[in-house]
Image (tube, rainbow, N blue to C red; front, top):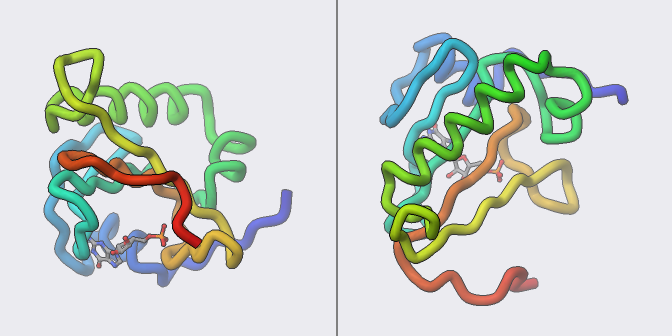
Length: 125
Ligand code: 5GP
């Protein structure tokens, strides 16, 4: 897999502290913060601190420690945000965009967590 990582992408700048974010969780390998243009009452972005462009890049190339930390943090923030059906929440949707067909705006791997309202059909277009 041949991905080139752009060190000047917005999330790289957030990780460096060059621009502010609203963090909700942080671990050694993972950061979670609020999306600046929320599409639902809960709209979180879960990102690895490592330099991965998209989910397939992360899944193929991240260490086992990074991968476990990312997913455990994902589960923790779903529960804390009150959207986990396993913890009494009404549910959430995860979106992971990769590349132009998915209209990936920021080329640093991230999962969106959307919830807090009925989210409608999976795809609109
Ligand atoms: P993508 O289309 O790459 O899956 O989604 C990128 C997301 O990052 C968008 O939902 C957008 O609103 C969000 N975003 C873009 N710039 C910033 C920023 O500077 N801060 C935060 N918190 N979110 C951002």
